[in-house]
Image (cartoon, rainbow, N blue to C red; front, side, top):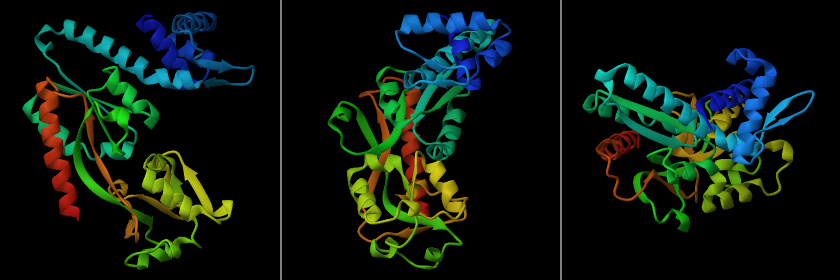
Length: 299
């Protein structure tokens, strides 16, 4: 496996076209096909499904995407470092999460960290939730942000709670529900609802979603694969969403209504025990200060 193979893979993944990828890489189409096939042989997986009409990335290819991106980025950074010997002491910190919305929580902490480490190079990785812990286990990232649901397989990791957040009913400010001070489950029985699949990872929230969905027409229920998609549908007037309050963006015209009987979730950072890296330890400290303080100020 080499960086040229990985770059060819990323080119096909980005364009979903062997012809366009070949043009981007400035090589022939048979050459890029050969690179992908040799990479698939080495990994012993199929990375793309190819027909006469289209190219699709497989689940295995999607899973390999973040690894390929990281390896190409690391190689490029190493090359630049040795081109500029005076800048070799780069401080790296890789952070993983499953929602772009969560990245908005990090700006203050990273700004403070950058002031302490002028050569800081943060690497922010957003992947589907099912890939998140694998990135931490294999060392692709140093820390991940997630909701703690108490899974046994996560017990060998250290968890630092940043905030507790209730599940709320969020809706666009033009929704009639927005005029209320709070809602109950019975209030939502006749309302079109938007559910975020990630919330199904929280047992209590999953139970709440099934209770709300019971008896509803399929026309009145929208399932989304991300919080960002749910926010777009809310703003477009397709209904209200049941999500943790901390994921409701402050700069969007959305209202977060208390939902009677809804559970709280614990959100924070997972990392390997006893982080020896000074940059990671300082980031954990700063994240606790900034994110906790920010959410307390909003409460």
